[in-house]
Image (cartoon, rainbow over all chains, first blue to last red; front, side):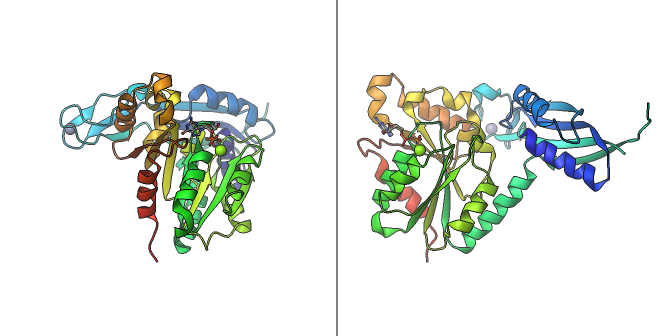
Length: 109
Length: 222
Ligand SMILES: Nc1nc2c(ncn2[C@@H]2O[C@H](COP(=O)(O)OP(=O)(O)O)[C@@H](O)[C@H]2O)c(=O)[nH]1
Ligand SMILES: [Mg+2]
Ligand SMILES: [Zn+2]
């Protein structure tokens, strides 16, 4: 995952003729499947030798949010997820928490 | 000290955009070939290859099947499939703990799948990462061994959540592992209300016919 982030950021940097990447900001959903600590650790290792060799990784964790189309917001936690509505028994949708995206890259030009 | 300009490039690029693009291309290739691609995922040892063997036997001569095997370094699983007389292609991922769309795309260059009705892709044994990397499959099928415990769907919801079908395997061992099939089924249902759930045993063959008839119904017609 860190490799994918670095690949995208380096492509951006090359396209814009940047000399280095200063920071990469990502949005990481609680239920993205990626754990913050693990991502930070693998980024530390993987950035060596890339344009992001000294870059910081800014992680914004997006909490899980679920809602029932009929009844509205449903409280949920990642490790006791229940996607059946406690009120009507219908399907509950994941409104937030699955994000795994780059927000911005700070480039040195 | 040199002064340099910092330019902020804002975007909202999915981190896995490259994988998504390649997966979409694989998907279209499978559709064009009218082959049902099935991504088979599980923790190590839950019984993916055993399920495959049972499924291939049950499909018998009725359906033309092929298998792509993902494994860190061995070809043991591909050998098990070849022993059944089914074409199989091995992908060794080395240190990578999941298959990705690029690996499958490369495999397709050497292993044409146009002649198959169904292509099974056995992912690397891992309860977490394979769930994030689409391969271009139409169906994600998870094999879960009941011996892993009834709480796992709650502890690792993502793979359960993203699967179209969940096979609860090794039910022959239920009397020995103190796991409630009812509780396990409820937990799977809660993280994925839409999954088809099949309790099976590759040892006794129980439940295999139900799963195979569900699968068979997903295979595109002529
Ligand atoms: N008792 C029992 N053992 C099983 C069953 N299915 C698979 N196994 C055993 O579980 C082990 C792992 O199976 P395998 O198919 O290689 O798992 P994989 O790593 O997910 O491909 C093997 O020793 C199988 O014989 C089952 O339904 N019941
Ligand atoms: Mg196997
Ligand atoms: Zn509701």
